[in-house]
Length: 249
Image (cartoon, rainbow, N blue to C red; front, top):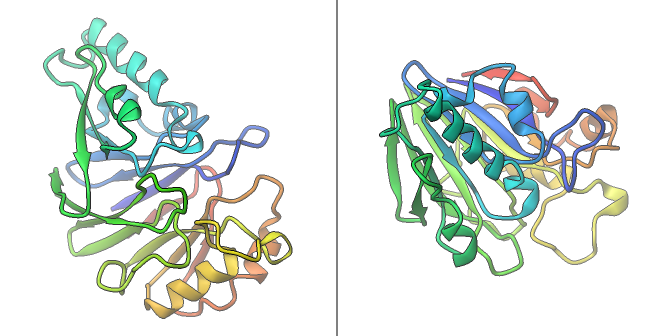
C-alpha cells in the first residue's frame, strides 16, 4: 500500500499548495481520500484521474471537497474522449448529511453517490474499508476511514476532536494520518472539533500506531516547529505532511 500526500493544508492552500487529499494505491486499486482545493493538479503528477477507482469523502467542509466539481467534469470529459467507459462512473462514498451536499455527488454518467456511516463496510479491489464518526464539533457527520490491504492498516483520521473514540478502530495502525490543526500558541481553550499537533502525537502514542503522519496544517506553520510539538510520539516514524510525500506500507 502506497500513500501519496496530494494536499494537507487548511483552511486554504498556501502558495503552490493544496488542502486535504491523499492517493492510496495497492496492487489492484487506486482511491482518493478527500478532494480539497488544488488536489487534482497534484494528482496529475501521479495518476490520470480517469484511472481512479473511487473517491471517499470524510465530510463536506470546503477544504475537503473544493475540487469535487472539477473532478466530476474531468471524469465526464474522459468518458467523452473514450478514456473511461461511460458505463463506469466514479463511485463517491460520502456521508448522507447534509442532504444538499449528498445530492450534488451524482453527475450525469460520470459519478455516483454511495452513503457511508459507521456500519458501512466496502471492498475496493484488495482494500477493505470501514468508518468511524469523529468528534468534529458542528453537528454534520465526519468519518475517519480504516483501510486494510495485504495485512497492512491505514487509518485516515479526517477532522477529529479530542472526544473521538479511536480505541478498537485505530489501535496499532501501520500508519495513522492525524490532523494537527493547532500549535500550542493558537490552540483554543475549549475543544473545537480539531486536535493540536501535540494532541495528535499523544493520541498516536496511546494507540501504539506504528507510524504517524501529521496533517491538516496551516500553510504558515514551519516543519521544525511542528516536529518539536510532536515529540510525545515515540513509537515509530513521525512524518510531517508535505505535498508529494510518499509512504509505503
